[in-house]
Image (tube, rainbow, N blue to C red; front, side):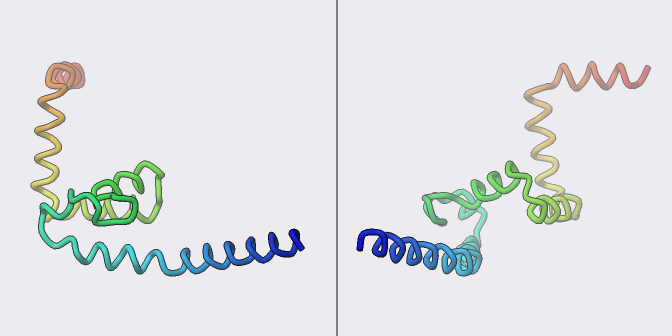
Length: 109
């Protein structure tokens, strides 16, 4: 009886996981639809697990998800991403000005 109950519970859990795997992408897409203003991008608890959109992007990039990386790269080379590229460049330059400058000078020689 215990083994049968354990099998039934395991089957129910497997079915629940399969349902979740099918429905989760649509749920996340609907949650992304609520990210409409720039400030929404960083709002905690927009997504499951108390995460924000920027955290989802970071995790997908860290996991080397091919589809995410390809879409992100396509976006980053578009004209719309110019302000972001400039902001990243300015931030990086502030943090590493001397190394950037000296590496560049070496490249010129």
